[in-house]
Each structure stands twice: as structure tokens, then as C-alpha cells.
Amino acid sequence: MPDYVSAFHGERHRFADLREVLAKASPRRSGDELAGLAAASDAQRVAARSVLADLPLRVFLDEPLVPYETDEVTRLILDTHDAAGFAALAHLTVGGFRDWLLSYEATPERLAELARAITPEMAAAASKLMRNQDLISVASRCRVTTAFRNTQGLAGRLGSRLQPNHPTDDLRGIAAATLDGLLYGTGDAVIGVNPASDNVTNCIALLEMLDGLRQRHDIPTQTCVLTHVTNAIEIMRRGAPVDLVFQSVAGTEAANTGFGVNLGLLREARDAALSLRRGTVGDNVMYFETGQGAALSAGAHHGIDQQTVEARAYAVARAFEPLLVNTVVGFIGPEYLFDGKQIIRAGLEDHFCGKLLGLPMGCDVCYTNHAEADQDDMDTLMTLLTVAGVTFLIAVPGSDDVMLNYQSASFHDMLYLRSQLRVRAAPEFEAWLERMEMTDRAGRIRQLEPRTARLLAGPADAPA
Image 1 (tube, rainbow, N blue to C red):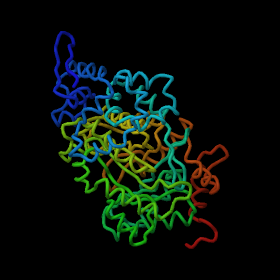
Image 2 (image 1 turned 180 degrees about the vertical axis):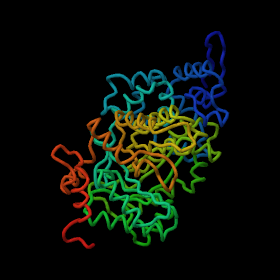
Image 3 (image 1 turned 120 degrees about the vertical axis):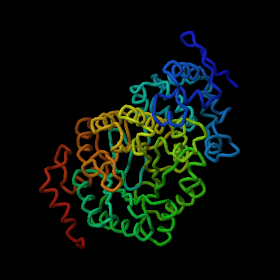
């Protein structure tokens, strides 16, 4: 076992174990302070990073943060590790790994080959030694492509989840918000509703309305009602139109138990969704959400800092070949990410770790109204993430989710990002926008009036 000791500025710092080194090396955030895991001073933080930089990558295989015998996420990480691929990295320290990731050798092709040789803990450790620009640089070279009715993750593309939530699940209200988002060219990643009332009957009504809307306009996208995976299994049993199965996941078995899920249940749901064969260009049928602080809020973090345990959640997601994964970065609140600076850093960390591990990583660029953050912070994060090659972002009407009571990105923000950074929607969805005469010759969304009439009219032979 390594000796976790560092001398810094004449002070000697000793750390009890690998978990403490990782926690003390993390950038400052309120969740780690709440858990009593954060560095007591900047000097201690730098000392921990010095120790971390000199640790061999192999230590994360030899010293699991949560015991193999008691945690199925640990077993998943170690049992599926690509040992042959890791041979190319085995000689590196964490600092050396960070340097290699920033080198010319870390091409998109090489990063894709090594994705399963990297454990979540290795990715999290490297991120703690990186500046924001480093996280952006590496993530932008990680290409992860998935598909269902369109293709997500292609270079030069930015997907968007259209989130038309309603406080009473009013079908007309949700349909109106959906049409509004489509008029701004959003919704290629998924049209996804968080139901206010999470029961099977209500979810079926929402799914049938969204699927009817999709079919009426022949939209090459996928729909999802973000209900619990057990509800999704029952909904599929009843024959309702399920495209994607959704579930929130976390980085420990105990935290996932708090969500009411385990790996076996997720496997059952994925098999059921695959059996429906609803995809047209691919069969990635799962949609996962994660977020820093989830394990801590459940008292299930095992003394691991919130960013590292968040990265472990990506191992869970990766096992089921999802179409989409996103971190709801500021949604849990200032108890875990206090202000705009912490939210921005966490968003870039999560995206880096997810992409490095081979996930189609997106983000809900968001904050709660009692956090020390504002829309300017979100403008910064959404721009940085797009530069970093984020797979998709979430968009809600007017940036204000009237059901979940938090602030996110808007339909207009997607137009800004696509225009300013020269990124486009999924190719199949882009072709649909053109076919519906909703874009001009330059691919820009047209002025509102003519395209509104075109979309509302629908195909000539469609029922009202």
C-alpha cells in the first residue's frame, strides 16, 4: 500500500487512505465540506494533489474505494475492466496519465480504444489535477456515437432534449410546449417529460400523446416519460409506446438501492425495451441521469468525495449502452454545489469523466433559485460544454421549469450555441427541419410565422 504522505511548504501532511487523498485533492465544493471530507486549507489541498499525482494508476485496481464483497458497482467496475487495454497505461502515475491525455498521442481513436481500460476512479483522479481548459481539451477529443431514431454524438453536432414539463401534466399544455420547442429546432436528443404525477396510468397518457405527435409529423426523434424503471417495465407490459427507458443512477450499491434499483432490474428493463424494436437507425434504448451529491444526500457515499462517487455512476450507465446520459449539475442545490463557480467546474468534470469512460454525455445546465448562481453562469457553462463537445443539453421554455422549479437552458439558448459555435442538430432531425421548411438555405431556423403554420398543419393526410 502506498505511503500517503507529502511535505509542502515545510508542513508534513499525512492522509489515511486513498479515499482521503482523493477527497482532499478535490476543488472546493460545499458538498464535500458538508460531509466533512474537504481539505482544511489550500495548502492541504495542494499537498493531496502532490500525493495523488505520484500514485500509480494501478492503485485504483488494488485498493477499491468500496469493498468488492459488499458493493455491486465495485464488482461491475473491476469485473468489466479491460485489463489488456490497460497494459498500455499501467506504467503511468495519475500525473503521467493527465499529461498523456493532454498529449498529441491521445487522439480520438486512441481514447475510444482505451475507454474501458480506464476506471471511474482513474478518470476522477486525473480531473482533480486539471484546469478547466484541460477538461475541455480532452473531452472535445472523445467522440461517442449512439443512435435510436437519429444519431447522437457526431462531430460538429449538438443535440437537445426538449423538456416540456407541466405542473399538472395537462396534455394540451405539454403539447403546446413541445410544439414551441420544435419550432426552435430543439428535441433531437429526446422529447422528455418529467411527470408531476408518477403513476402508470398518467405516464401512459403522456407517452401516447407524445408518440401521436411524433407520428403525426413524422419526427425522427425519440420520446420519454421520466418515470421509475419499474413503472417503465409495467408500461411496456401493457403495450404502451416506450422508446427510451429512463432511470436516475448513482455510484454505489447503497445509493442505487435508495433509488429503488439494482443492476439486475436495469438489465430486465433494457431487455424489455430492446424487444420492442422501436428504433430505426440504432438500438440504444436507455437514458440515465446522474448528479454530484446524490450519494451523499442518501447517506450512501462511503466517505468518498462527491465527484469521485459521481464518476462511479458512469460505470453503471456504461454497462447498459445508453442513448443518452446527463448530469443534472446544479439541480440538487447549493448544499452540494454552492455557487456558479462550483457548478461550472462540476459540469466540466462530469462531462470529462463521462466522455473519457465512453459515454454519450450531456448536461442539464441548471441551478436552483436558492443557489449563488444566475443565468450568466449558465451561459458560461453551456458555451464551455459545447466547445468541449457535449453530446446534448436540456432546454425548457423560457429557461424556467414551471414544474420542477429550477432554472435551466432555453430553446433560444440552443439557437445561440448552434449559431455562435457552428454546431448543428442530429443529421436526421436536421433533414426533417428542412423538409418541414422550418430552416432556410443556410440551415438557420426561419422567422416564426410561416413555420408555425407549417408545423401546426402537419401532413395533408394526418388526422386532426
